[in-house]
Image (cartoon, rainbow, N blue to C red; front, side, top):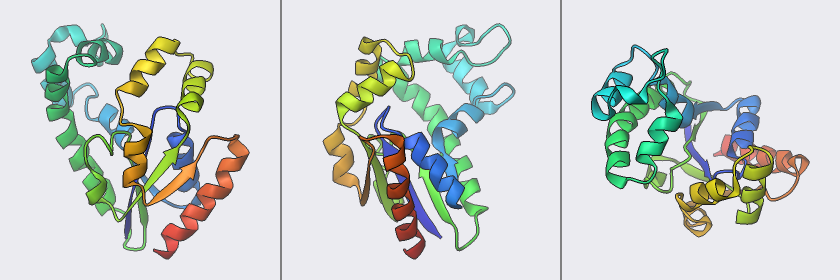
Length: 196
C-alpha cells in the first residue's frame, strides 16, 4: 500500500486532481467529506459540537449550520481549536478505517486540505501538492465559486502559504493552466505512485 497525502490551497484544483486519481483507481479518503459525515444528525460528533457551541449552530431541521459555525470559529483561534479537538479525532479514526479496508496493493490518497497547516506530511509515503499562483486561486474562487473577493482573500490568508506547501511536497502538480493541461500531469503522478 502506498499512502499519499494530497493537498493544495483553496482554489488550486485539488478536488479535480482527487477526482482524476480516483478515476485511475486510487482509493480516495476525502477529509472534508468525512468531516461532514462525522457531524451528521444522530452522530456523537454533532452532539459534541452542540454541547460545545450550543443549539444555535443547528438549522431548524437539526443539521449542522456550517456557515453559522464557520462564522463563530473562523476568527477565534480558541473556538476553532475546540472544534478541531472534536472533529479531527473522528476524521482520523474514519480515515484509518477506510485505509485499512483498501487492498495491500492500493494507492490510498488522503485528500487533506490542511495537511501543511496541521503538520501531517510525516504520515504519508508521498506528499502531492496541487499548486497554482495566488492570482489564479483568487480568480477561480471569485469567478467559479461566486465568492466575494474579500472573503476569498481572507480564506486564502487563513491557509498555509504557497511556499510552505511547496516545502513539504514530494511531487508538485502545476494547475495554473487550463483543465486540459492538468490531466497529463495527474496521469504522470499516478504512474509514479503506482511504481512506488
